[in-house]
Length: 265
Image (cartoon, rainbow, N blue to C red; front, side, top):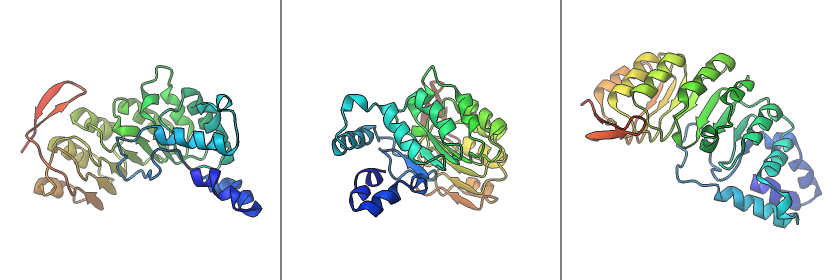
């Protein structure tokens, strides 16, 4: 995004013209997680600093008065470059509810979406808006935020008939979250729990209840060992089950309920 805005257009006139083509803006990945991939763990330590740097450089390069370039204005400007053809969208963590409402209309072709954590906790956020993306296939919850998992899945299952993948990397996935996934999305095909805090029983619940899983990424999890033979046996129906680097601890605190769970060994 930074190159398309601030480097490529200044090479020559033909390159500048090329950057205006909506096909160059099909993947709208705002900093600071430039390497966003729904099946790779999202770095929980990223901040909005990368986004602020981009805005500052944009203002300087085009000699724009900073007071006239708000977060909302800038994001809308970028989104409009896609001409409604964007298929992947990762909004910055400083995104506003106003912007989210705008992109649900301006980007009707979105298939992969990453929802910023701050929006999920915004009292003005209407999760029903997610249902406007009828072609949505994969949803990633920023920083593995699973607090509104039940509400989000309910909307996806009802409104987004092509939904098949969920990224909850770095999340807390215990019995409640596992049962939510199994009960609301039993036909899910792609599930990313990489780096999650969990336990054996929760992983077993998902493997038992989601028979259509094609990819289940559970690498580097805390809560079960990567060489757990029982989990491997229950994962035999999954074409690609990844659990390298996962390890078992004696106990974990589940923040959602403030309870200590002894892990099943």
